[in-house]
Every structure is written in structure tokens, then in C-alpha cells.
Image (cartoon, rainbow, N blue to C red; front, side):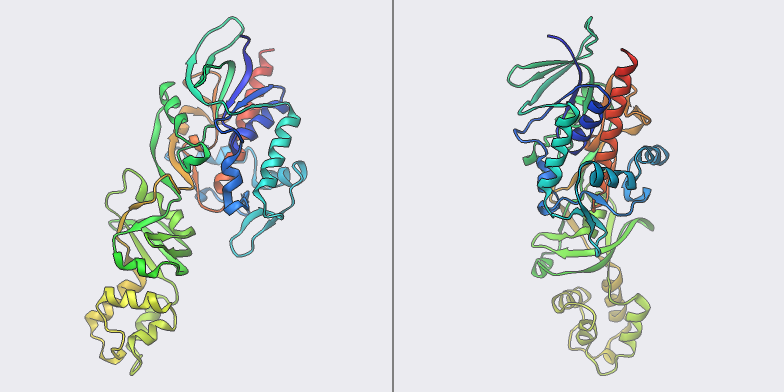
Length: 415
């Protein structure tokens, strides 16, 4: 069997982008995809609307265990404004910024439009998609025709490749085909993985009383702390669920609690409404007002009842009768509320997978493996995780394009 110039494993966001730019560079890639229909995660993203990009981006919107300098250089290869132009001008997708969140969506609010445009661009560029094609085994070979990889599907089909791009995604939302196989392949090929964990994932509460607040949403500032060290602080919308906590602000800080080194990390909540000094003044000068009444001026009734119960304060107690001890206890619940956790919702609902192939083992100018010539990585399989709000799609687009272009340049240099 003759060798393909390039095989890309995975037809998700990163894999399709790699296919488009590899093909545009003359690489004639074959994209193999586990699911019968490519781009399952794109289709369900953003509740079916597809939060395709953020409107503003900073390096602090991403986490990696590797070099922040390397990460900065990677994003510099395709700045946000150029990515936006690609979607609008080249793919023909009209975009808009959701004012309250800063997220970028297609004006149609239809994820299908984004996927269809990507697939059309993939085919137009000359890339071929084979699906379903589930990879069972990957071997390194050395054939006279330049093949360096042999891919064997579960049904026995084979492909030989001169260059290989692993865009297999992670382990999150496994119903879309993200089974984590790419991580196993990376290990088998000699790569080191930063510890894997669910990221952007809802958290479980250890306080059964919080279930009574399910459905309540409010603005909250959360801090992930270890000892006196603040690991991360974010402010955004917070949602009580039957199991615990969700919403953008919870998802953003969740990696600190789902990661293997989470022991000793605490989640503290400041229920926005007033700052600590303002709350203290309100309680000190509340006079004949009830404590419950004062809190209900700023916070939902059920949240107030929950916080008062935690602080062991009677809602009907007059502010003037509140002891110093109970006032300080209540202030702690209002601005430093210790949300004791009992785990997370896991990969089933996690937006992405944290950890993955470490940046140090990739040539960051190309995303080629430093250990295996001709092997490239892009997307969620790499140890780069963004916040909620289109940042992980941005990483997929940027890394997929870079891997595709790099493959094309390598193959062109050998002809």
C-alpha cells in the first residue's frame, strides 16, 4: 500500500483546521474520524449555538504547565483578529459579539453553519475525510516510500503515512467520540503527559442544604486558595444546581479542584452585592431592621436563609442585637464563604480535558514532536486549557492551522 503524505487523526475543530491548511499547502491530507459524522463537539457547543471565539483574549485566559513564553509565541502565529477574519471572510460566516458575555457566535446562532463551512473548506482545499475510521493501533515504520507511520483501524483497514497529526481531542463529553485514545498513543510514542483531569466542569457540594437553592443564579466572585496563596480569582455568573455549583465562574476555577494535586485547595465565595466594609456598616447601623431583611435587600431570599443558617444567625434578629461573634461569622459567609466540595461531574459534562502532551516536547514553531520526527499535535490533546467563552476553540483553530501549515512545509521541503 502506498503511503499518504499526511494523515490527521480526528475531525474535530483542530483536526479540520489542520486539514484545511495542510491541503492548502499541497499536503493532500487524509482525516480519519471515529464517529460517522465529523465535528460532533462543534455541533453541540454553546448549546447548539457554537461560541466560536472570544472577542478579547489575554495570555492569562489559558493555563499550561509549560512555558508561558512558548504559549505566547504559539498564539502570535495567528492573532485573534486574523482568526475572526478567516471565519467571516473566508468561510463566509457572519459573527456577532454577545454583549453581556463577550462571546462570539455566528449570527445564525447555529453551530451547524460553522461545521458545514469548515467541512466545505476542508473538501474544497483537497483534504479527504474517512469516517467512521476508529484507530486501534499505531506503529512507527520505515518504508522505502517514506512512510513513517502505520495506522490500523479496529476493522483491520490500514493507512501508511509520511507525516501524522494527532488531533484526537481529550476525554471530555465521550459521547462525541472523545475517548482519550490519543493520550495513550502519545504515551506509546514516548511522550510525557501533564496529569489529565476534567476541566471547565461543574462541582459537587458537600453541604446537602445547598441543593435547596438549585436554579438560583447570581453574580459571584470566587477564589481558589491554598493556605494564604490565592491560586485564581474570577468574577462571573454562578449557578446553584441539585448537586452543587456550576455557571461560568465555577467552570473557570474548577481545574484547581479536579486536578490530581487539588488536596488542600479551598473554594471561597464572595456573594456580590456589597463589599465587606459595606456589609459590616449595614449590619452595625441596621438598628431595628432584621438581619434577614438587610441581607434580602442585596441577595435572593433562599440564599439569605442558607447563609444565615451557616452563620447560625436568626433571620428575625434585629441588627442592633447581633453580637460581635455572630456578626463576624455572618461577614465570613458573605465575603469568604467556604464552599466545601465533594468532587466534580467528571468528563461526562466537562467542557475540556486539562493536561496532555507537554509543550516542552513539541517544537513550538511547528508543533512537531521533539521525540518522533514527522509527528505533530494540535488541539485538546496538548497541555493547553482555556477559560469558558470560546478560548478553547481559539486554541483549536490556532494550533490546528499551525500543525497543518507545518506538515505542508515539511512535505514541500522533501519534494
